[in-house]
Image 1: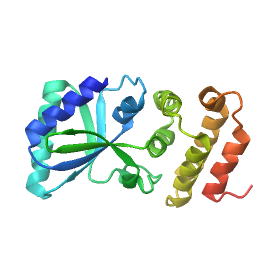
Image 2: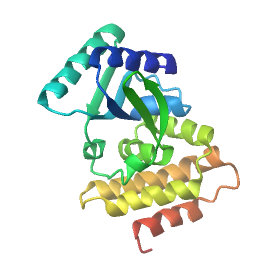
Image 3: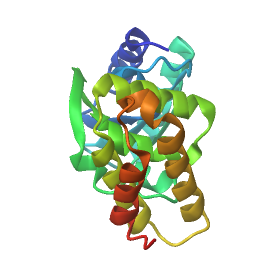
Amino acid sequence: MNIRQIDTFFKILDDELQQDADIILTGAAAGIIHGSSSPSMDVDFEIELKDPGEAKWKRLQAAISKVLDKTGITSDYAEDIDRWGMITLLDYRKKTVLYKKYGKLAVRVLDPAYWSIGKMTRFIDPDIQDMIQVFRKKKTPALRLAKVLGRALKESPRSKELMLFRRQVESFFESYGKKIWGKSFDPDKVIGQFHKAAGIEM
């Protein structure tokens, strides 16, 4: 998928939906806008309808089906993407920037650090490669990223996922830190920031 296909997706969705809505992009589509080259053909997003209700939600579902028929692009969408995983996305709605407006649709893209929470939770190779590309392209500060990820760990509900998330964050900084931030990258310092933000006592 590329930016042109993302634009086509939302132009058609606006034509079919014909109602005011705010959208926050995440997943592969947000990664592509930030600079990754993911082969994924799906668009994941949160949507807030300005005039909500059961009838309007059904209209949205019908519009999404028509977009799929016309583009072949699948999508996952919800009113609250923070419910998609066990690791919280924190105050993600305040951490977006406007990407484009398509008629009545205002499409925003999630900040790279907050976007990476979902990627770090899954931690399969395409997600890792997306993060490497995006952090390099956007020059995401390592210490800020570590702080956001640590806060996400600390503020998530207790579950078995927490230890897995912790290990994956630590592994990411240890394995790919120098590739992203250069030879001077200090994994111990950055992981220490992650632990501090998460409230982990070493």
